[in-house]
Length: 138
Length: 321
Image (cartoon, rainbow over all chains, first blue to last red; front, side, top):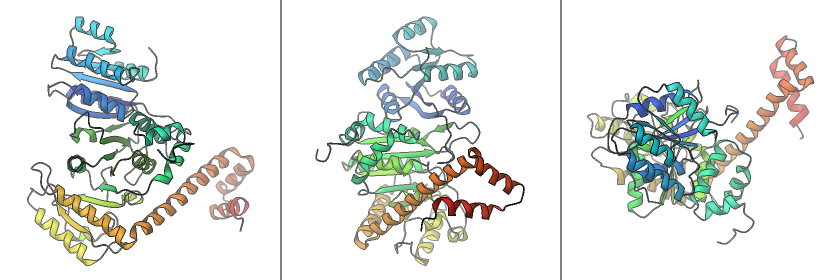
């Protein structure tokens, strides 16, 4: 009890929806967020949108990060956003990383994905964006 | 629901099965948010009735996979399950990677399971400071069984016994010879020993060593520890493991050891809460209160020794007898 840190850690869910098995990026990001002092719930591979939303609600996370390299983002991400809204959890910010073409990224942002990181994004940028989103800033 | 009137709204919602209210209250408990106090207090009277099963053991022995397998078994029996899995917090950043959900296999629409990951947040011993309160919240939410999976434990990490009604110590083959099993600590708290990864060579020897250990003496409650073997890759032994847990739970009821254990755990909890509070107060006052700072100066200057300083504070503040 006495050792409990005064500041409350940000809780973030990192999940990989879709069927590709390339989880290196998700792991690198999870590790970076850990090193930034966040509690990262790493849900791993092949999560359905329903799995992601259930994990986010049970774990009461401040933020959701999705990694995808399969190309199924246009089907899966809007579904996750819809499910979150149905559960009255639409306020939980969602960010994404992976191989997402610019045109798709624009449409996903319009649909409510708050940030999208392509290949080559620095970990510093991901961490600072994650922190900003979790704290409720735009 | 009877007796629900007068409860704080969050407590009522948790009792009525509102999973969001449960998840949010767990967060508040973890964060030491004062709003959680009235909720956990209001729910306390309805707790202490179900099996609280601890899964502990060194890192990598397969605790999370076993937890998933046990959840599957109990769901197939129609039982509802609350589960807490604790992983360590970084001593450097305070951050944490909570990776036990990966192993969980269940249908996303199954409300009969609630799984929560917790970071240890600097607490030693294998669980977080608030894990016990979170386990109670899961019971209050109506789950039939609650599991607590600890941080990968070392030989001296035995805090789970302050929460669990049945402690399962999970091991694997080749962790050491039988002298290891004679050492104090982890091996003493096992109500059930599980040799997991029993498909690997050496499982027979490990199980035999543990059976020998169990035959040498009984646990504190006078229970003879059971030894089971499991594998989660080619699933085997999971029903045996659960049956061993239930055998211990029956033993607790038949002998009165459940009540005795509960008294022991709660006495330790009260003492612990008081110790935390007093410790915090004294620490604060030694840095903030002018008179106490002078006392600390004297101890630093070797004019007063720390024993005498503690005696003086105890006499002045707490000795009311």
